[in-house]
Amino acid sequence: MNEPILTIVVPCFNEEEVLPKTISEMDSFLTALISENLVSNMSKILFVDDGSRDGTWSMIYKESLNNQHIKGLKLSRNVGHQNALLAGLFTAKDASDCVVSIDADLQDDIKVIRDFIEKFNDGYDIVYGVRQGRQTDTFFKRSTAELFYKVMGMMGVNIIFNHADFRLMSKRALDELERFGEANMFLRGIVPLIGFSSTNVYYDRKERLAGETKYPLKKMLSFAFDGITSFSITPIRLVLMIGFLSFLISLAFGAYFIGLKFFGETETGWTSLITSIWLIGGLQLIAIGLIGEYIGKIYKESKRRPKYIIDIDTFNLPLPRHLIN
Ligand code: UDP
Ligand code: MG
Image (cartoon, rainbow, N blue to C red):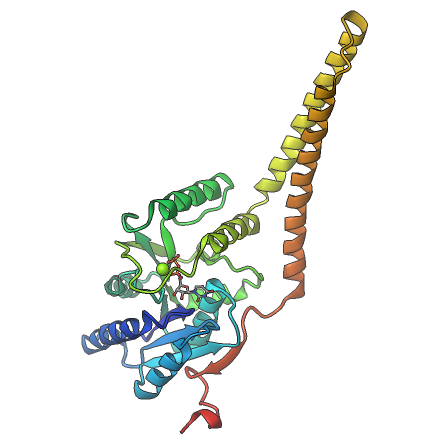
C-alpha cells in the first residue's frame, strides 16, 4: 500500500509568540508519522500567514528554507481565519491525498491526526475533530458557544456540535469544496453539505499555549451572525411572523378602542398612542435591518471578489528571484 501524502494547513495571524513551539512540535510529529510509514515522505506542513503584522512570516519563511517539510503561504493582507484556511486548503490539495486543518495555537491535540489518517485509510473522505468537553474554555466562551449551537439548531442549520475547524478532508472532498463559490464560506456549515462519507474523532481541547485569542467578542459575534444569515432564512421569516402578529394585535386594539368610543368612556390617552408608535416603529426597524442584512449578503456575493490573494507561495511555486539568496 502506498502511504498517503498528507498536508497539514495552519492559518496564522500574529502568532509569533506561539509559532516556534508550534513549528517544532508539528515538525517532530510529522517526522514521526513519516518514519512509521503512516504517511508519505512527501507530506508537508503549510503555514498560511494571514497578513500578520508581527514576525510570523519571517519565522515561517526562514523555517521553510531549512526544512523541506515546511512550506509557507503569505497572503497579501488579513482576510480572516476562514479565508486563510481556504487559501491553504486549495493551495495544498493538488499535491496531497488528504489535508488536515488545525489552528496555530496548539489547542487541538495534534496526536489525534493519527486517528484522522486511520479513518482516511478506512475510506472516509471527511474526518471531524470533535471536542470532548469545554473544560479549558472560559465560562463566557463556553456559554456563548452553547448559545451559538442552540440558535443554529433552531434555525435549521446542520453543523457538527463542538467541532471547530480541526478536520481532515480528502483531495476529492476539497475538489468539491472548491465548487462552492459563495463569498462567505462558513466552513462548518458548508463541509457537511459535501455529503461524502464522514466520521468523528473525539479529543480534549487544551488551553491556548501562548498569545491571545484572535477571536475577540466582536469577531465572534459577527462570525455567529454570518453563520446564521448565510445558512438560513428563518430570521427573515420570523420577522414576517412578528409583523403579522403585531398587525393582529393592532387590529384587536383598534376594535377595543372603537368599542370604548360607543359603549364606554373615551379615554384619549397619550400612553396607548405612544406605546404603539414605538412598538410599530421598533418592529419596522428590525425588519428593515434584517432585510438589509440579506440584501447586503446578495450584494457581497454578486461582486465575486477573490477571497484571498496570495503574495508568496513556497508550496507550489518556485520562489521569486529576489527571495532566493
Ligand atoms: N486566525 C487567522 N486570521 C484571523 C484570525 C485568526 O488566520 O484573522 C487564525 C489564528 O492564528 C489561529 C486560528 O485562526 O491559528 C484560530 O484563532 P484563535 O486561536 O485566536 O481562535 P480561538 O481558538 O480563540 O477561537
Ligand atoms: Mg485558539
